[in-house]
Image 1 (tube, rainbow, N blue to C red):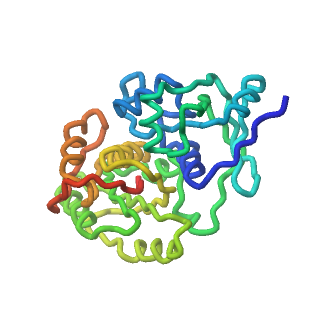
Image 2: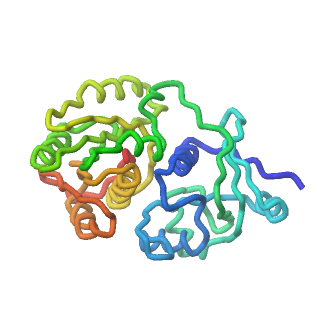
Image 3: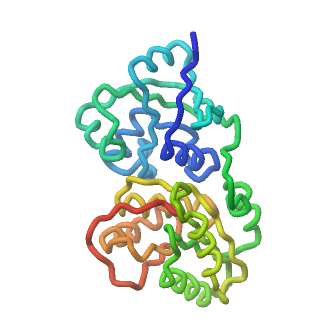
Length: 288
């Protein structure tokens, strides 16, 4: 029986990279039905841990039949390079009410969609043509941050907001332990001005109160509302070693309040923006 070879689109490829580099801890693969249902309805895994992204591997009915026998799926990029293997532990469909929720994140999902869960095993590194010196997996970056007692994460999505940068620097200057600044950059590689965006951020990041500054370029995650996006940013920042997290100034006030209420559970000191917030819900890119 042949093994399903699934070519990932740009969004799926970004999610795979974040999963494999440790940014999506505690996940090590695609969600099972209990976890996916819980994330869709409650922004939590079935064990109660906060998690906002419904990370799912979708299959057609024909692919599902193949996977039933092989219990494996190979994940490929658009150049047919095999990047990873999924060791499938369950196949399932969602109830119609949850299909409607899932379709808000991925419009291709329908009542006929099958899902596969299981651990993802890396095979080849995902390649990028530029800025590899500021692309880090979690273990490598944490090693570089050894000795930093306080690490404030600020987002650049896709540009850095000077109000957010100033807020981070003020926080560091008021800290009695000092610390470093972690600037996490989201810039869509498919954008025509991608290189200019990253270069501009590099030139704009200045913080005299930080002992060190580290830039980290990550793939973007699209399709989340403001609250889910901010939560994912915070969790990824924590996974990369941040101890504090500056809420992006574009996050609506309601979403900011929600994150502040859950900061102990998130495991970070959440620093609210000083800028007056809009209450409108907007989808944000991930620059976690």
